[in-house]
Image (cartoon, rainbow, N blue to C red; front, side, top):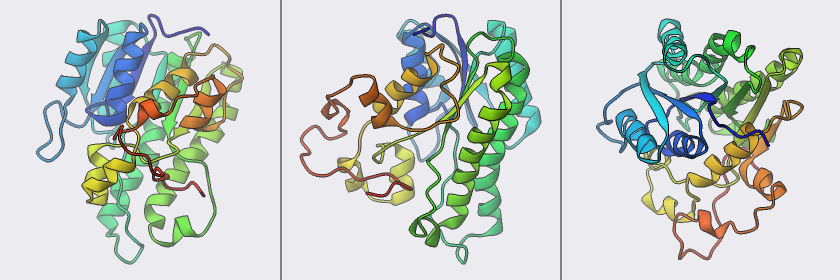
Length: 277
């Protein structure tokens, strides 16, 4: 394993949840973190902020900067990359974690909401990946990791919220395509998706049920799985749509109770979207 020492990693959507957990995990293992999100300060309805993420990274002994970026806008994406290069001298890895979700049907999804999901989800993967490529080509461990699911064509995942599903599957298609496109440049491209629902404020906000958090895992499982993927120097590990639990089991992890959001919960965890039971 190559590790992450002195590697510079851009993480979008790093204000809270999975993005924040990854920032802290990577920093503890020596990475320089470029924490990016739409706002530097706290959201009126959701806990956490970029400022808090950077402060927590520094408390853990890591290095980090906060960059305000709306991933829908190319100029802001380019500024994010330029800030990383100016501060740390380059970019080695990109984690496409920013996302927008609405579990609504075609009939009930406005054009504005449809565009927002596609701009923040798949279009942002394209924009951010394109912007970092010149720097990843100069890295000895270039990697793009996108939070998107396996492409499951079971109609049940398309029936009720196909606008959202289409945006997430497009992200995964970009992973598969870029992995082939960038093989000769020795840049790995992979996706990661949780086996169970992850306890985040965004999930609580989207689902509208606090009880859902009792049947979830914490963000730590995604951070640990992501670390196992991007810390390798095996550039043949590319073009995969990984599941967090699967990659950790391959690495020898056996105790998954440590990831329970409610340690007292003994029932069945709630599977994430796009995964057949």
